[in-house]
Length: 585
Image (cartoon, rainbow, N blue to C red; front, side, top):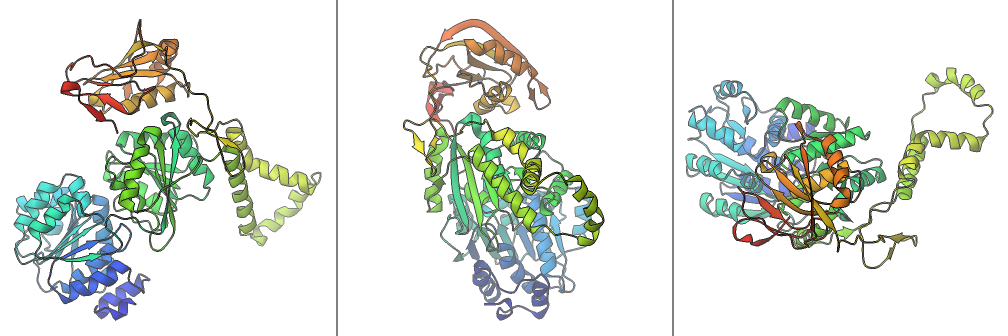
């Protein structure tokens, strides 16, 4: 089917043709005729990148009465990036539609300019929930004449805590409106919205509920927690043409990883909620223009990033909400292209892979972290391919050929090739030449396809470890977690594999058990280690205590939480009143 076979006006078809689209995606093919032919409510279930904006945007443009200056349509979405993206696309769709005004309303921007835009009486608003509530309460946005309400990425809006705002907006809009709900998943909260505010909706579904798109290949790489960053670098280096997003859970981790990668020479930048709107737009523009090869981002910040040719999504850390894995992975494999989703997983997170597989309805394949020699070979082949396909400007080069031939006269063909390759290749050989295998310890030796042993290391014997206590001026107020402390120690001691015991985290301070043999080494390393803008203060207690594998609680001291041994048993901790055991994720 082509767009011209759908019941769309000539002006809309002209705009679509101008954008270079000829055939609708499956969600567009199913939803557009329904919305144009009926006033019934509609729920659309489809993954990110399937063309949902056009599915609701084109019918909305067709049905707006341009002679009426009331607000007739509202599109709600979770983030300002997605708000701006939808607004841009709808403006392109309506390029030849006269007297139709579409205005974006979102947080993080001067409210005065948005108030002035609303006073021009646009017919369509594309808005984030919080800012629209502000405008309604101020009497600036009147949605009492609303005819069409679109909830885009409804599951994400609810995950972000916009339940009260959605209830308020839907309660303020008139009965009899047509409500369109689009979501990649259908958790109970989204089902509640559909039940309370929609009238016998037609369900349009592309693919299985909560399933991943078939154009994405899924892999996970099992590593020790301390080797996570090394594994990330290896995945990037093993894919020389990578153009992708690296997802972290927190803003702090996002910035830290981006800073480390920039320092290590990668074309990368960060995108997270602590950045100003101007900074975010600057970074996103560089990424869209491919001036950046990699973007390190939080889940929320990446919403609305309209890039269709990403090759990879890398989950540096698995999301807390397993369903978010689908949203992350959906950033690649878009517009019919193939994509790859890679998850870096430590041993205690392995169970999450099974849960994700249940949601996806497909297997996630375990792959070995590339060895140094594999990376060097891959980089070499990429270099040769680039040399073979480079464009040669004969007119520009000809004047220099004589001088170059004279300088290289003493080098035969083979020697010249070796010198040429080494110029680009030596840095990878130098870095990876002595690097160890990152596969975690397993009970039996494994061999890869070339017969090389993978994953065999001698386990650390912790049966007689003696610990010293170390106090840090970091606590819950610094958003610190046991993983952060472990990562900080591992990073500062440059992979010394320091045995770590119980970790106690209070509001402003933390106590960590360190192997007595490493106490002074860790103290000196942490005293020099940066932690954002904060200067670390380290107090090493000289007394020792014996190893306690289960981890003992020292009482609820002002909200302090006590975590079990982080060197041997990573799976459980005791915390909260009563010492109830919970999974630490």
